[in-house]
Length: 102
Image (cartoon, rainbow, N blue to C red):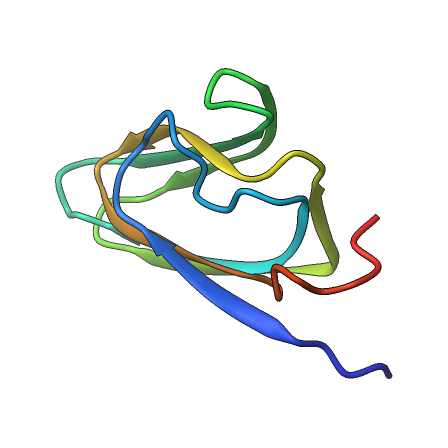
């Protein structure tokens, strides 16, 4: 198995700005509920109104950690469109300057 250079990036809100700007492959994500109701996280590419790549429902008081075999490619960066009843999320991705992201 090839060695991966993994980078962790944390975000705590939806924004028009990219969570990660360059194209990147996300291998895992950890999402924490704020306990105020069912949480929703929606990640897009291109912009926060772009194509939805990942939509996750998080039950109240839960912390979800999901791993994606082979990763999920965000071809134009990672944006957070929907961030409801969450305290934050951490993306585990290729190092931003990593090669072979396509």
